[in-house]
Image 1: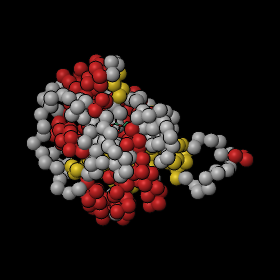
Image 2 (image 1 turned 180 degrees about the vertical axis):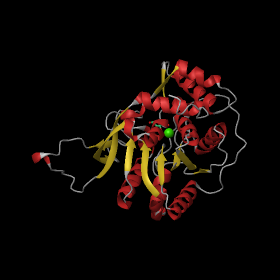
Image 3 (image 1 turned 135 degrees about the vertical axis):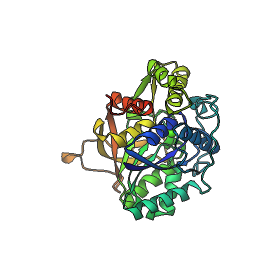
Image 4 (image 1 turned 45 degrees about the vertical axis):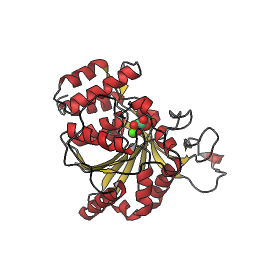
Amino acid sequence: PIPIVLDVDTGVDDACAILLAALHPDLDLRAVSCVGGNAPVDDVVRNTLVALRAAGRTDVPVARGAARPLLEHPVDARHVHGDDGMGDLGWPAADLRPDPRHAVELLRDVCRAAAAEGRAVTLVPLAPLTNIALLLRTYPEAAEGISEIVFMGGAADVGNATASAEFNVFHDPEAAAIALDAAADLGIPVTMYGLDVFYEPVITREEAVELVAVGGRGAAELGGRLMQFQHQRFARDASTIGDAGAVCAVLDRASMTTELLPLRVELAGTWSRGRTIVDRRDWSGDMKHDPHGEAPLRVHVALKVDSAAYAQLWRDTLLGRLGES
Ligand code: BDR
Ligand code: CA
C-alpha cells in the first residue's frame, strides 16, 4: 500500500476523504493533521476523530495544528459545512484523544520515520496550507520522507470563496505561496486537485440511501449521511465527494488528466487575492516571454477526471465492495 498522510479541516468532504484513506487496502494511512479552515481547529480535531472512529481506525494519530492563517483573519465555512463543521448530524463524539504533539511535529516525525524506512509518504493537504508551510520551512528535511504532494486547493478557472479564489488558498494565501515555493525548492512534485475537477465526482440521493442503510454508525452510514446533508443544504440531487476526490487521485492516476503548468499564488490583487494563476498561454514559437522575470514553479494541474470512476471508488470502498465490479 501507498503510505499517505492527510492534512484536513474536517469538514463534510474532508470526512469523506478520511473514510476512503482509512479503509482502502491500497493505502496505508499514517497520520492526520488538523488545521483551522472550514471550522475552528478544535472542531476539526473532534470531527476528524469521529470519522476515524466510524472507519474503525483508532490506531491513526491525529494532531491539532494551526488555529489561524499566517496573516489573514480566519473565516470559517459553516454556511457550507454546518454549525459543527460536519453536517450537524448529531453523531456522537468519538471516545478518542488527539496525539499530544502539534500537527507540525507529528508531520515531521512521520516524515522522518518514512525516510528512515525508505518509504516516503504521499502528503495530501485538503485544507488551508498553514501546517504545510510551517512544516516545510521549519523542518525542510521532512522533504526526504515525502514522495509527492497532492493537494486540494486552487483553480485554473473560477473560484468559490470569491469569483477568483478557491477557499483553501483564499483562507491562507501566504501559506499556499510558501508551501508551493518550499516544495519546488525541496524538489517535491506537486499535483493540484482544484476546483476544475473538485465538484465532479458525485453521489446521488439513491446512492446515499444505500450507504446509510448499512447502519451501525460505521463509515458507510456516516458517508451516506454527509452526502444527504449536502443534498438537502444545496437542494441538489447530486452531492460532491469533494476532498475525497484528491484521495481517489492518489489511488487512480489513470482516471485523471493533468498538465504540468506554471503557477503563481496571487498575494495582492483588489479582487483576486488568493487566486492560483495558472499560466495556460501557448509557450511555443515566439511567445516565450514572461515580464515577471523569475521562473514560476510548475505544478501538475488536474484538468479532467473520470468522475464516475472516482465516485464509484469512494462508494465501493465504504460499502466494502472493492473488486466486485
Ligand atoms: C475546499 O474548501 C472546503 O470547503 C472543502 O473542504 C475543500 O477542501 C473547497 O474549496
Ligand atoms: Ca477541506
